[in-house]
Length: 305
Image (tube, rainbow, N blue to C red; front, side, top):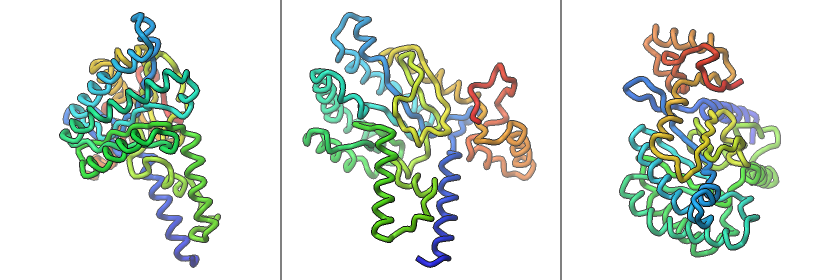
């Protein structure tokens, strides 16, 4: 690869990195910013079941209805990508009987829900390892992806046997392989190149990550992709997470100021300059809803550094 080609590739990676770190939000007609991509850690199923004096798997079964409710609000509000943490790479450590029940539930979900998702124009995708899953489940996953691959209304991404550390390691292995075969040079490796090999590299990075169940951690979920996502923690268990709870999270997102390393003053100046030049839409493309944000520390949610 000559020096000129290397420079071009570096510039392409810089632009790709910039595009993914400042994702494009949907802006509703009422002026409220809505995340283009929402990721959810569906936690609290077992605790909900214990609270109801039911078998642990009951919480997961009831949680399927919460998925339907969330999908409905995504359609209503214009959220284009929904990623759900369905089964983590660490979940294999749970009791064998529970893992078997979870795999049966996953199989049932794929058998019963994909047709309706297809009719609603949703593209179904999966991230994570497939080599440790049963062949019949992998066949259902492949069939779901093939059936819905032409859909463009929305994207439902299910993270199954997924871990953020595995994702980064897998991307690193892919890049190392290309270095070995000579298709890229070591000096070409940067954030942009790694980002192209990370799961969901063709989708906007998550704008909002919700975790239910009163826990306040990421649990190895989308560690690379969530670097600039807004985090929202909800006390209710996943089976109780309904339309009102989801709308509340979206409303909270709408009043947060997303700075992407800049200052609030810079964003205000950018917004004003954009409006004066007739280019205010550029701010929306960066997910900056500065016109509707109260900038006092007491009213703005957690801020990005």
